[in-house]
Length: 101
Image (cartoon, rainbow, N blue to C red; front, side, top):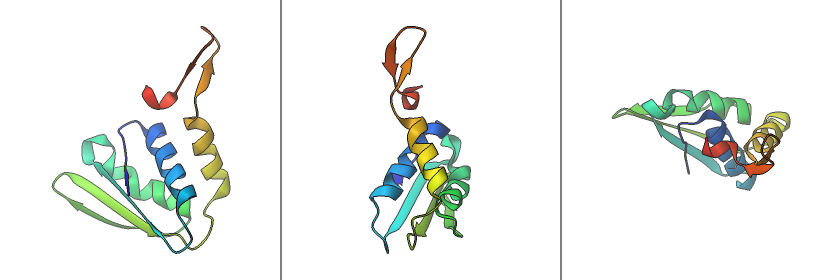
């Protein structure tokens, strides 16, 4: 289960890491408040898995889930992981994480 944050990049990173750690045959469940980007969860899961996602909306929140039967979209997966990694701020020379923005 992955609770997605409001920051889209952070949500993508969290979903990508959850997908990587999920075994074949497992189910990835993602949830978020509508104000925190809950409306985009199904689209993110579809992009990542390449499959149709089931979803449910209730009480101003959404949840989406998809089973892992294949590795998913490798290029998207790697891109989301790379963008969420700690990166160097070349202006100040200090490492930072885009997930904390």
